[in-house]
Length: 96
Image 1 (cartoon, rainbow, N blue to C red):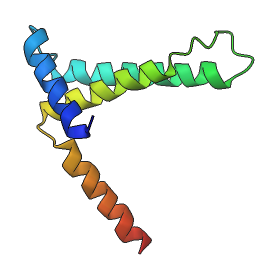
Image 2 (image 1 turned 135 degrees about the vertical axis):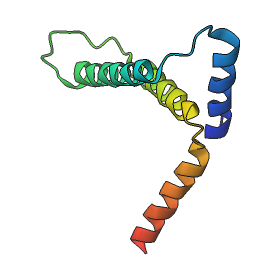
Image 3 (image 1 turned 30 degrees about the vertical axis):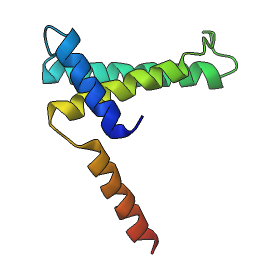
């Protein structure tokens, strides 16, 4: 699946299955929450003496964070494919 396809899938899924679109503030809080869950999963996986067990949720948490970020981008009609290509071009220019 391409970034564009994923972004469109998220957009259509919100239209079909969500009665209420979260406010911008709620979306930002969800993003922070999901980022924290990624951090927790990384901590559990990497800290051997951690008091919590690694429940192998890291991949799932990254997926949740990605969908949350795409939802925010869709709120502002940001074309993530275009922006990633622009980022790649900036990196290439720096290296030359």
